[in-house]
Image (cartoon, rainbow, N blue to C red; front, side):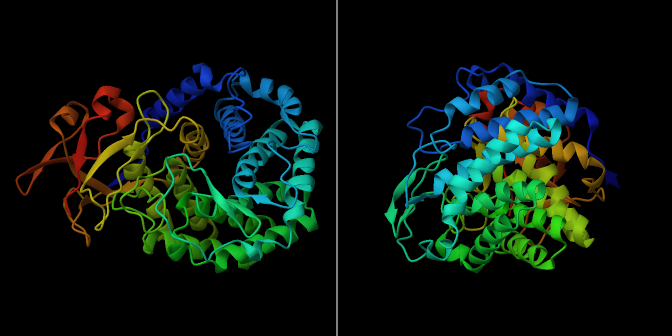
Length: 428
């Protein structure tokens, strides 16, 4: 049996997220620009602009803050035309990462509205912030202490080899995404040379040993897929596929089709930003290769991994990591909402899902049995044991092996006070 994405469900998810972004003071023009001392320059601003444009692409509706941001942005840039400090010869990887999202937002806005001022801002950011880093990525510090540090929002952890490093290990390479989008628009060959340098270095890094953040890795892979789409050079497709394989089969993905925030740290949390990226990457690979396994993984990410990440206020939050070596065998909210990143990032994910919903069908058999990990499945749908408080929201419950199981309960339908205390046991 084929289970298509329910139109009512995806529309409700989109409307909830749009309402969150359109009505919360946190995303209005008086608050949408982060304070000057925020150590992720351009990160919130870029994600917000990308989110606003994503909703415009879905519905044609302009969230007012979108154009207000474009009007105010020039006054928020430093004398070199980007956000944050001029660090001279030192590279701050969080600054690069944040500006990748700003480039994405500006590129999306330019593609919708052909605003030449926006194109000019984008080119200045590339010329003054990114191009001076050319030739320096091979010196990205990989021989360093593997400390378990960093919160849901990463932070700067120190200076090494002329780099200001982040607890979101590898986030400098997030920029492959934003820069590849800029290349799509400009076809600048010098920019392509910078991208090739970054991609070659990042593909060579042992991401598991360095405990790299899965989100920045998946985002970089999406950038590689964009480069493949623009150039048809299969080296980019090969690079993206190698990252996908490492993520899916090399300890990056959980039993519930979510993510470990960092490789090798199963005691941490999932991150909706990465779950969005994993779905987009899997489906882009399917379209490029016709590998049905990639389509199936993308569908399973939506039908299982997306179940709990969106909250009842329309935003997105983190959950427990469920793997064989994690401390938990239950799915439970860790952070109710990561409004500074994931609630905004969700918007592009919902746009992409809505655009490709016909491909994201789940196949079911009507028979629930255990997969190779011992998790109860009906085809592509995971079955879990929900808390009593979640049963009114479970939709369907079946008795298997003496257990009252249901598909993973969708948290966007569940009140906050229950989300924050309830759990769903994953049997394995």
